[in-house]
Image (cartoon, rainbow, N blue to C red; front, side, top):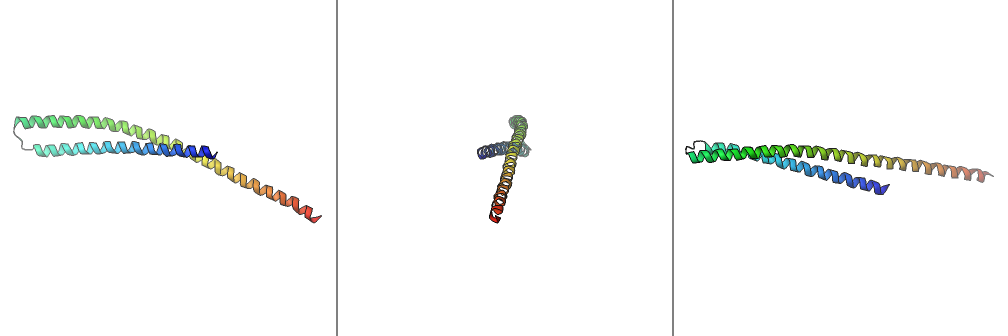
Length: 133
């Protein structure tokens, strides 16, 4: 049973690591979205007062690129959120399997202790009557 428990603990640890990794990916994507928003704000401030057609056209293309990048990042974020939820559920399952096995191990040990105590009492009871004779 100890080997199975070790395997379950390893599985739970691996599931937790995958969850942490997925959460890290999600966090990175969220940071990229924030950076994209900051770039848009900065570009808007920089372009304020530009009068040439070339700079206005370049600015519009830049904003269009940022908008497409934002849309792409939002799709990535949605996929990453799904991945995080899947990994969280996987971790919960692995954790409950490990906990159930730990509980079973503890119960068996308690039963073993009770049986040992009963056996010792039985042996003592067998010895005591013989000593009285």
